[in-house]
Length: 155
Image 1 (cartoon, rainbow, N blue to C red):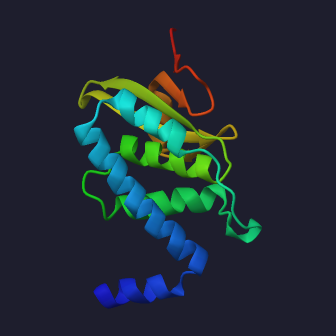
Image 2: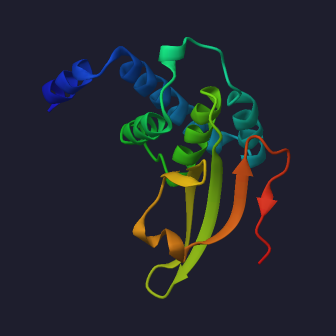
């Protein structure tokens, strides 16, 4: 199993390997930060940490590659919940010059009870955290790193 994972790693391009490594570090940082710091502090870190950085033109991954890297990292970081993944993806999107909104929604189910879910939208499309059940979640909060204020859904 380890050999197969190493073979897969070596098949990745340098850009993909670098993005995967950055994502693992960032997902671990966000997970640890959510355990130790208030959510508002993590949100501010995300706003400032997600500022676009200059790089070479060929070094800019696409939004799908960023989503792939965060999902990959979440397999190796313990307790990398949908919220952890969404915040990490938002930071990476911002660092590479893309907009990303973290949506947090809630649902109530007779069998499962109260549930919450976080997902990321970029350019009007669900990029990370989408599922068939996404319509069952009532949006409660949108975190946009480009907006100075969070948007509460008051419907």
